[in-house]
Image 1 (cartoon, rainbow, N blue to C red):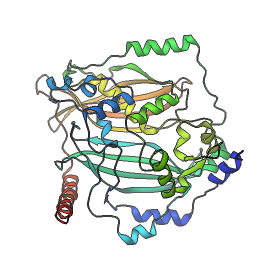
Image 2 (cartoon, helix red, strand yellow):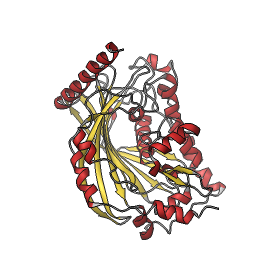
Image 3 (cartoon, one colour):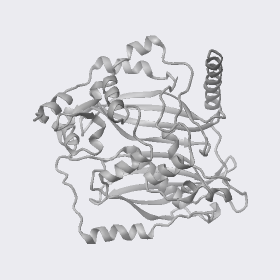
Image 4 (cartoon, rainbow, N blue to C red):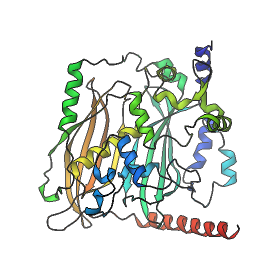
Length: 427
């Protein structure tokens, strides 16, 4: 039998290196084209539907190939949150060799949590759209946390353009890097017990599911909104391994490390051996399994397996689009993931309108949304801005990217086109 305690102890015995922190700062402000192929490189009718289903969204605008033909979009479109998982390799400038050599192997064995971020969306994603990205680190700070002591807070910006060179979205993700052993030894959440549900508990959750409604084809006009309006209830969960599997089936969670099987898993293990930790049977398995393997989750300081932060980010977007309707367009979301969402936890969503304004021809509303679990603990919150149709001005208007971003993206796209042509001519 494998001494799993020994395996986990070795896998969690990595600490921060001050030299790593200084080396990581070399990456600030360095934008590079992303060469990695995402699980989905081109949106399709099927991949859009499967992504929506994976987060529990059955809006026909996303799930029906024909429904969208009669909407303002003229086609099925993807939930805006899907842009994050679509990516074809972008040709262009890579990391300067000097910086690449100095930053190789950063923070090996250090755990990474997604703690929220902000996203601006500029264009919808249609079937057939192929997205390309460039990204870079914006900031890096060292802070103390109750969960794991010294922590590193990174903000990375990713920009994606479609095959027409249009900016589709800008995503800034806030990641928290922690020492696994420090988090386990502190045991901040060690007293949390798995939740058990009675039939009556499930019935109460089911009542919320049964009452959930999509605004759908009926426009929600800007003039009809009042600051202070309450949004209807929504629930997600209780979280199970099945729900995590469904989320993966929608296309999320395969990169940058990759969830692969058989020979591909073997090759992946050879590529990034430190990412693989033996399980109780002595089988090297991905460190990412803490999202479904409670034994490994406990080894890094959590009482049981937990969700992805990005899962709750997609849930916030689902909540907003159900309320806003098919004619609206979510243009911005800033969210904060404050507590873990453990297996067995249910998340109850509520929200209210916090602002209403006309800005550069857009009729906008701001909503604040929060998630509270069955322990009555707020686990996450988000501020979301939505462009709504107007009874007087007409359809919801999309936001244009800032001029400097448009120029930067245009230059990156032109470089991709140039290198693509060179590659084709060299064959």
